[in-house]
Image (cartoon, rainbow, N blue to C red; front, side, top):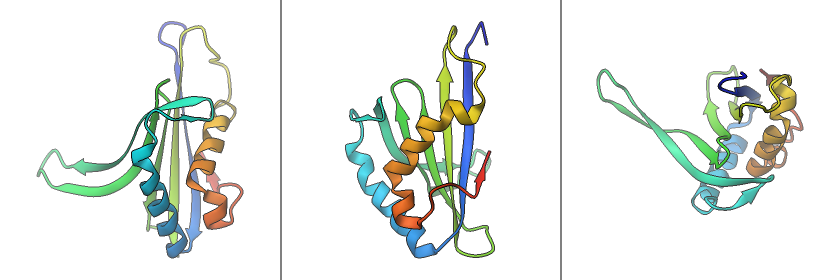
Length: 140
């Protein structure tokens, strides 16, 4: 950490969201992406915001609409993905990443270090408004 810094990672899962609510959340957030670059959110400036796809390196097949990501000039990012692997409804997975440079705060617990980013992610996506949830079902 003293040589390279530290990257904090985390994930929040919101499980068993009614499919319609999950789809509305993602559609609304998708609509915001084109206008986010250059804007200030939660004390950070958005560098890029997009929807990403995955290209299989073996067979070259491409899977569209794999998630929405918001990257910030400080290297932090938020990724939103819907998963239908739960027993009912949809699961919204929100991933957080924050780099802390050399000389920074390297001894924080990940949830503490990521709280401002997690709060921003919930606000940006309107998670409480769309799902009624004020906290995730699982936080890792």
